[in-house]
Length: 180
Image (cartoon, rainbow, N blue to C red):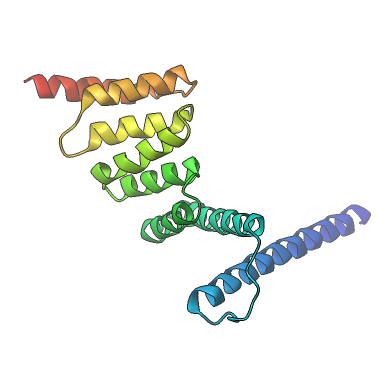
C-alpha cells in the first residue's frame, strides 16, 4: 500500500516537472513570437553583447529541440523549418547543420543536403555522423559520386562511426552499375 502511494507521488511529481518544463518552453516561444512580430517595446535598453549571445544560443537550442521532436514524429517539412531556424540563429552549430541535411534527405533532397553537411564538417571536422551522412548523400544524389561517398564513409569509420555493412555493399553495387 505504501509502495503504491509512493509510486503515485513520484508519478505526480514527474508530471508537474514536465508541465513546468512545457510552460517554460511555451513562455520562451511566446516571447520569441512577440519579438518577431514587432510587439516588443521599442523603448527597451539595448542588451549587452554577452546577453545577446546567450539569447541567440537559447533560441537555437529551442529550435533544434523542436526539430528533433518533429523529425521523430515524421513531420519532416516542419522539422526542416525548425532546423533552418536553428542554423540561422546559431550558424556555428554543426549538429543543427547535420540534422538539417538529414531532414532534407528524408524528403529525398539529397543534392541539397551536401552543402549543409560540408558546412557541418567545416565547423567540426571530427564529427563522424556528418561524414557518414555525407557519404549517403553522395551515393543517393541524382548522379551518384561513389568516389566521394567512399572517401566520406572511410573518414567516418576512422573517426569511430560504425558504418553499416549494407551501406558498403550498396556503394559497391552503385560503382558496378556505373562501370557498366
